[in-house]
Image (cartoon, rainbow, N blue to C red; front, top):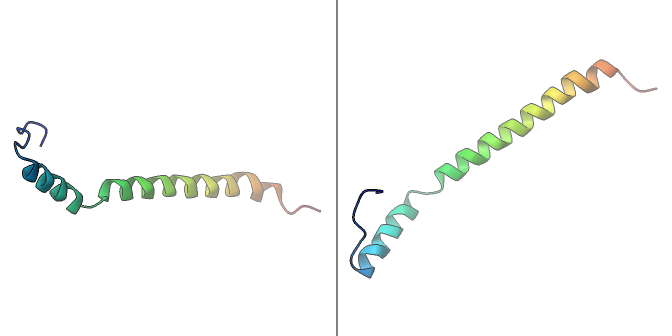
Amino acid sequence: MFNSDPPTSPAAADEAVEEIVAQGPSGAIVLAGIATACVVAMWLAFYLFVFLPRGPLQ
C-alpha cells in the first residue's frame, strides 16, 4: 500500500478505507495484550520480591 498510487476517484478511496477497516484492529489488540502482560508481570514480581520476603505484619 505504501508504494501504490493513490485512488483517483472518491469511490475508490472509500473502498480502500473499507478494506483497511475490514481487517480489524489486530495491532491494537496485540499492543493492549502486551501492555497488560507487562503490568501483570511487574505486579507479580513486586509481590514475590517485596511483599512475601517481608512476611506478615504484626
